[in-house]
Length: 241
Image (cartoon, rainbow, N blue to C red):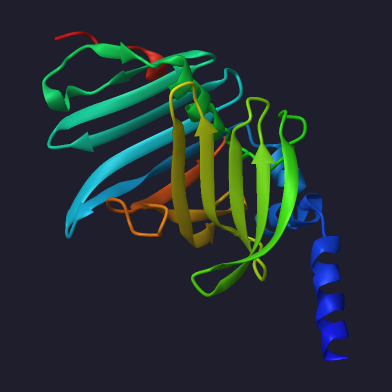
């Protein structure tokens, strides 16, 4: 009887589909109706460099009126920037003394596009060209999570670790295969709060390595704005000095 009980429990777990888990996660974080109205997101906060050392950051993701991405990082009176629009982009990094922009290559654009979706990759994933697979239950530092994998047309794989109780995404792992290398990134999410639009979003993100060790400080957000006004000036290159 004990064996039969665990056999039945296992069949119930794997009877679930990726869509079951994804839909529950979307419902838990605001619902499909709210997420369908999202065309842009603005994140403001600080990168924690160390105790009492905060570097202001901004990140903005747009799909309307243009598909674009903007981010900046300010430290010691200098500000670096990253901008992407459609299939091109540039970076500006004055910390090494350079005062000109550098273009973003095709591999970086491909990676950035995965992170620059204001709705997140899980919402309407099939319409965005992804396939989804449910990989069953996993353990994340003592928390039981559902593991869902999205695969892009290019063969990139993104793994989502979704809490079985809250259905919040607690961790994301991105694996991308390029011509000469495979790139992996690991991000842990926490401090989930509801913003003014009614979406529940993590206000703290932490990059980790494959073993879960923290890589640098966390990003602690102070404000998340849904559908901010589009400012095209953000996409302008800074003047060379």
